[in-house]
Each structure stands twice: as structure tokens, then as C-alpha cells.
Length: 251
Image (tube, rainbow, N blue to C red; front, side):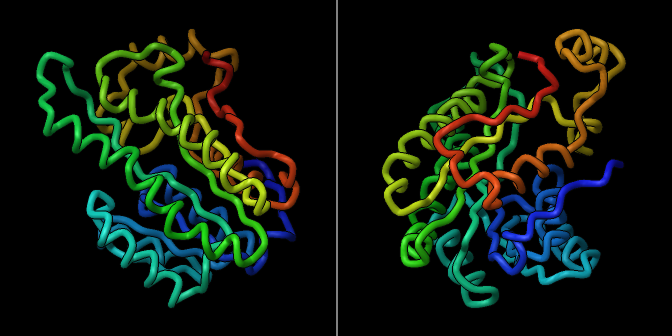
């Protein structure tokens, strides 16, 4: 693993991350903790959350929360504020790329997928933005996906939600920009999380992915986390309303 940059501007900053117990979220929690930030994360998996918090020798707090329940989300964010202070950085990471056939989708399933992959992003922003305004600035990072850029099939509700995350970024960057709050999207390609390896990685799918990428190496979650950390730092002070790709040139 290479030596990664340290951003002095992130030391003691307060960072909230959704879906922080595993995958890209856990790498992002770890990356901010290594910067000396105060990190709080939300996740539905209590055991995995506790294990990660115990593993990290840092100032890390977590709240168990079903992000589909907006009242519970607001309560959990309020609890993080009590524990570690108001957010300087918000990372809207939580999502599930469950596969589904378009012929089988019901209105109820569609709405549940939007609640899982999109709706909580907006309401998290709505909840934390007033504190960022009071502080004179902040950084919000929404995690998108290149699945819809590649016209990937097999999960129309997920792809729709992830494409909408880019629209959310653009409009909120405009609405919050006067307050020096930056809003950006990080766009992962196919990231080799444990979930992906368990469910969908096969020798054939890996070779197909390598053929799509300009770079030959598979993408580990840490590289998505590094882009998020950069966008949260003062080094990215003039970056807003844009997409930052971490997909090895696969579009």
C-alpha cells in the first residue's frame, strides 16, 4: 500500500459518514480517523459497527440506524452531534446495489430502493447544513456510481437512484455555495469490496472488467476513500458541483 497524503486541514474536523461499517464506508471512516478527524458514522449493522470502532485507535463514534426511516436518521445525526460536535464534513455513502429484474419491480420495491439509495442523502444534507452554514462552510460528498454511465443493466432502480445523486449534488452545490459549502460526487467503478467478492466476482466478470478499464489493476475501496478525503480537505477548496471518478478509466 502506498504512503498516502496527510491533510492538516482535516485534523480535529468533525466528519459524519453513512453506511460506515463495511466496504467503502469502513475505508472512509478509517481514512478520516487516520487524518486526526473526529469521525461519526451510521450503519444498520450493530456488530460490524462496534467491531470497526473498537479496531480504530481514534476518536470514532457510531449510531445504529435504518436510513430508510427519516425520523430515525435525524435522531441518529442529532446523537452524533451530541457525541462529537456538529459536522464539518458529510459523506453520503450508504447504498445497496442489489440486483433486480425490471419485470419484477413493484411500486413498493421501487420506493424502497429510492429510500435505501437516495432519499437519505437529501435529508442528511438538510439536517446538517444549518450547522455548516453557522460555521461558515463545509464539505458534502455524495457517493455515486458509474453503473449508469456505463449503461449497466440488472438493477434499474439502483442505477436510477445513483444517477439522481449527481443531480442532487449539482442543485445543492448551487443552493449552499454562497455559504462556502462545497458539494461533490465521487463516482466509483467496480470496487472490490468483500460484498462484491462474495456475491458477484467470478473469473469471467473480472476479465470483462479489466477489458473495460484503461488501467489493469482492480480497484480497492481505499482509493475511493482517498478521493473523499481530498474533497473534504482545504486542498479542494475550489472544487464543487462536480464528479470525481475513481473507476480506472472504465467509462
